[in-house]
Structure formats: structure tokens, C-alpha cells
Image (cartoon, rainbow, N blue to C red; front, side):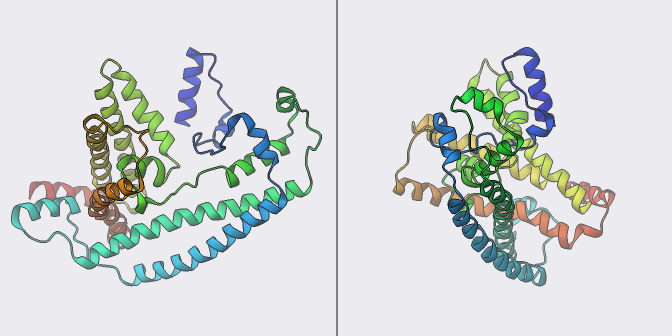
Length: 341
């Protein structure tokens, strides 16, 4: 809704900006997710999809869904029955304690449990995408089988004006199933912070955080593009962290700032990584890495990500098994007690 309101405000300033209805905007959360190779041949790619293509795609999604469901069931059973004992003290504070006292900040099994939990989350989002595509495919198969709108005009403008609601739905379903990136990629193959957060990790809110966090701050510091870009990145990650902390409060009645710290750390890491890679090494975002360079970058970046996994996973695990019976006041008291220790 906030994005829709922002676009409406922009349309008052610039009439060229076209704003869809609010209902229509709900079906276009990821405008950059469509992967049609040649936009000028948009209709050709849409019309090229036949029932046989859909059947093959459905078989792939159904097979993948069954495999992921069975794997998730096994993982869920294991995670539920083998919950580790996690300290109520934040992971970050335990790391700081380790630097000061040398006391271990996490047990090996707890770390393994956190990593397994994140893998479970990744597969869950992938399963949701596969399930959605199966539902979309069932609807699309009905529309394709009825061969809707065979006699559309060749003129594009006339075709746009004459499209029926069923045709619009059919095209949207084809775009979603065949030409849209999944909401979750393969985070474990990420080569950089930008690759992780812009391409591999959960993408459903990516555009929202850019529009509400990154772009306003970046534009505000237009006189200093470097500073504006750095602060814009941190703002987007800050909003993401606050959003996740809000979800923790709502879901578990547990207040903490673990998610905010986690995402701010990743925002700062992204700024520093690109400063080194882009400004110092001269390798911008458009630079194409060879396979060897990608492997090298993965070997540098993934250990950092894995090290930070407990900071992201522990609040969820503790929320599910420890804090679910506590109220916000109790957790606020604990937070202030930790700070005074």
C-alpha cells in the first residue's frame, strides 16, 4: 500500500507516471522479476506457450514439490525433536564476550541446528513457489484448453484495447510460470553481498525496501552520490531489520534487536564489499566474473554469511521454543538487564 501511495504522489508531480489500481498493484510486487529475453517480442513469447509446454512444466513442479515436501517433513521432525539449548543472551553479545574473555560463544550442535534451520527456511520458500506455480498451472491449463481469443488483432494497440479479462489473466499466469524468477534462488552459491540480497535470497520484498528505504535516502543526498548510495543501502537494510523484529514481536511476543543488527551488518558489509571491489579493484556491478573468480569470491563471502547465520536463526528458534510463552514487558526487562551487565 505504501508503494502504491508513493506512486500516486509521484504521478501528481509527473503525469507520465502510470499508476495501476491498488488491486492491480498487488499482482506486480516484483517488476524486475520477469525474464523475457526480448521485450519487443513480448507477445511472441506469450503466444509460444502451448498445453504441451505447460504439462512438462507442471510435471517438473509436481516432482520437485513432492521431493521438497518429503525433505521438509524429515527436517521438521528432526528440528522439532532435537532442539538445542540456546543461551538467552544474544549471539552478538556472546561473540563480544568471546573476544573479551575467550569463552566459547556457541556450541557446535547449536551452530549446526541454526544452519539446518536456515536450509529449512530456504527449501520452504522454494516449496511455496512450486506450489503456487502448480495452482497457476491448473488455472492456465483450463484457459489454454479453451483456446481463448484466437482472433486477436495484429496491431499491438488494438490488441491491448481488445484484451478480455481472461486473456489478461492467461498472460499473467504465463509470465508467472514461465518467465518469472522464483522468490528464492540459491543463497548457498552467492558470490557477494549484492548477489545474495538482490538475486538469491527472498525477493518478495526486495523492491519494497528499495523504494521505501534506498531510493529516498539516496536521492536526498544527491549532492554526494557515494554517501547517498551508502546511506541508502543501510536504510533499506534497516527497514528490513525493523520489519523482521516486528514480525518477531507479533509472532512470539518477543522483543529484540537481533534482526536489525543482522541486517545493518549486512548493509555495511555490502557497502564495504563494493567499495573494495568497485572503487579499489575497479570491478563494477556489470563486470563479468570467470568461474574461478566466482569460486574465489564464494570462498571469501560464504564463511562470513555462515558465521552470521546464528544471529538470524536464533531469534526464530528461541521464539518457537523459548519465548513463545513470554510477554513483551518481560523481554524488554531482560534486554535492559543485558545492557547493564
